[in-house]
Image 1 (tube, rainbow, N blue to C red):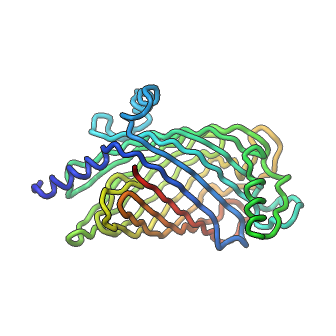
Image 2: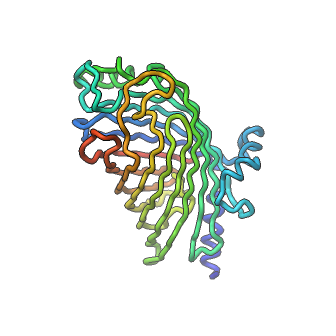
Image 3: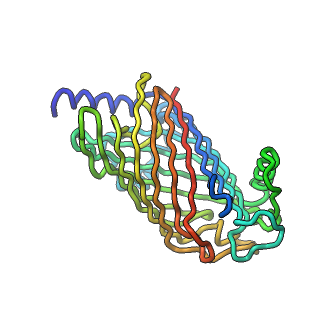
Length: 325
């Protein structure tokens, strides 16, 4: 490895192992597709190096059980570990929100309020020219589906504030039910190419699984990225300084769905439900912009039908904003 590449790798390792804390906000909405249905997702998260975490959580992150669940990440490889805390709300409604009549051939009204803890591990390849980096994340979420998740209040107040049409039909929403969700997310850099002095191209792959009462299934996909000084830690983190860096990306995902509470209905109570599709595809395009400690990511995701009587591709805008401090 040349001295210059060694220096670059050392800088990347230093960035990943820094003591920076990061706070972020994710907003997802089908804005522009409101004639189809209303989908809304808000998530606030905060992360810190495991060295700064409370001792109990740090011991949990380093436990043998979590290291076993982190497979196929090499447990003996040099990794950097961060803990991430999150809280969020997700809302679904059918297409027609102007009627109080139950719509048996459209998705149920549903809201999910949840909070969780994630352990993120990143391993950087020692060969800077190859960059076969890996990331593994384990996420445990506790939550509540139903009226207590406050979906009706959030949507009606939002429509009232912007003087949009009144919302009807929330009396048919899923009933109160506690939720428990465990997720595993695995990312790999499958290919990397230097195209110029700083221009780069890479291909990321992912294999994610989820197990729990909200969702159970498997996601497989990849992301093609092109830009300047592509980040190596797979996350929403930025290098120090005021230089503007960015890249564009194309993404695709195939989802195998075993269970989806928001379509299958309540687990132990009578509720509205619709027959779900077992296979759902997604494609997306977007850009990422980093300026000093601030990182912005905007994506447009198109999704195939999720249940039997749904017709036409659904589009969702996703905005991620993060800052390091």
